Amino acid sequence: MSTTDAAAFWNGLYTGRPAPGDPQPNVTLTETVAGLPPGTALDLGCGEGGDALWLARHGWQVTAVDVSAVAVGRLAGLAASHGVAGRVAAERHDLGETFPGGAFDLVCAHYLHTPFELDRAAVLRAAAHALRPGGRLLVVDHGSVAPWSWEQDARFPSPHEVAAGIALDAGTWAIERAAAPRRTATGPEGRTAEVTDHVLIIRRAG
Image 1: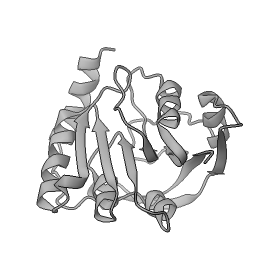
Image 2: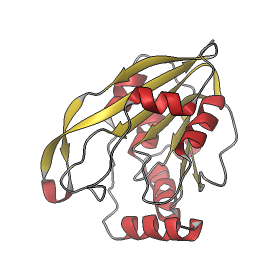
Image 3: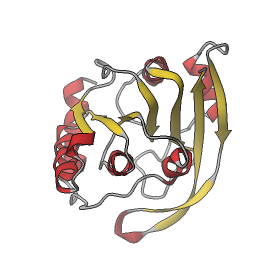
Image 4: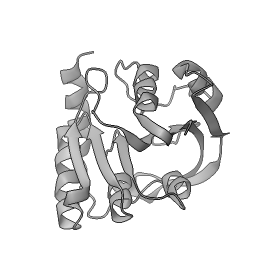
């Protein structure tokens, strides 16, 4: 399907639900970043913007991208209202077509799943190459399907399978973590379910 279809789908998704005033970050991000010195970060598929705002509040300079102009516009507004507009650059990108410029100490991709065609391995490979020496690529995927998900028939590769698909030179990039932790997720209307995440952290040699 076309870029226009993907943008329309995600714009419709975000337009169809209220914009949170203070979106929360993903727990894996906060755990991973704790103790790291602030630097430059790239948030791929920023969505509601919780990760980008949390990073900015903790001193990071963040480039946050999404295919949805609605998501990007909302994040820019939130960054201003939360006093971190100078630390957040919200950009619209279809990652199958364009990739943000720059070099980063952290690139995070949380639940970068889509019902539309996307060479995700190529996107994550570009993300790894955008890391500065010593930088980390954090990839968090669904490892199971929540009852409210639109991906009921999806099969999600393991962290090691994701790493193999990116096909990075082991002499330059090393797997720092590959795990499948479980957590309680909260979905629409407050529904909860136990789900599995697939967590992959790749570090570029310093």
